[in-house]
Image (tube, rainbow, N blue to C red; front, side, top):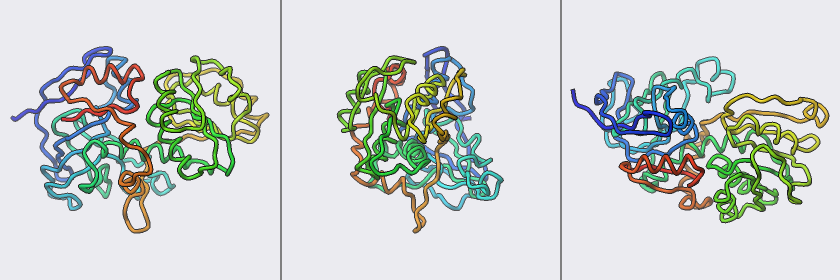
Length: 340
């Protein structure tokens, strides 16, 4: 059987190249030749721990269709694609209740994932975890389709009133994109970014957030900018303990949005939620955003120049995967993308 190269976790903060059997598409599958793949925070967690908890590794990828199963009608050989939830099945209970991001078919979408030369994509029963992309979007920008739809879910989970003060804790890709999207839709909203990384603070200023504050882990920031409380607080860190900080900084009648995937547990007193009548919501992406014409809002946004995409991405060749993961794990580039 033919084989192809893939990236695998071999220990804490250790990735290596391995040979895997060349995937062959089943009747409801598409085989993708991967062009590029972004490193997500959910990839960094098993990377730091040294073990994989999922069957696939890498989900922010772009590529080209090289083979299709007999039941697949939406894609053909040669189509350029980006990974990300374009369409859920529409029939399962979560879909029927308005939560397509929890479609029962969303598990095990890819094998072995985007950090490989080739990857299978499951496209059964109308479920499409990939989308066709036009030539105007290059392979690197196309990897942002999935994280963009996640950030859109964060930015749209609550209506941000005009003149509001919004705090984004965690200026990684999710937090930064959510801040830029809110700023784009509500120019008069005052947005403050907060992070422990001086590099991320500098990037936030370069991307023209209204203010950026460097904070110490787990501590209330001592800054006059942060003295008033906020109408909306977005926790995009993925650190459970930051929830207490978000609740403390939310003002009367405010909203706390959990936009990261919280790791660990936290003890906190729920009294402030009661006293300030706070609303706490989760924001889990990716989420499909179809247009009335049958297109994709996220894809339209990727095509636009409204967000400085070139400032968000740092590119590494696939051969330098170890160096790329090391940099991403140390809060270096906003988004690290490996190019095959």
